[in-house]
Length: 66
Image (cartoon, rainbow, N blue to C red; front, top):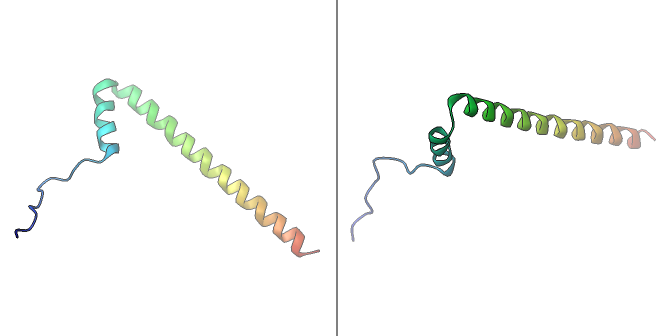
């Protein structure tokens, strides 16, 4: 029984495939704008999670001090 052959190149991920298609279909400016928008969405989600976490800490502090 022989060992499976080792690939010399990595199989591209789904994200890599999407970026390749994106680069073919969109101009550079559109790609930059989309990526900036997505970065903003992720940052807004992070800030919202931080606000929820801070609210929980404050509520716990209030209930434990009573």
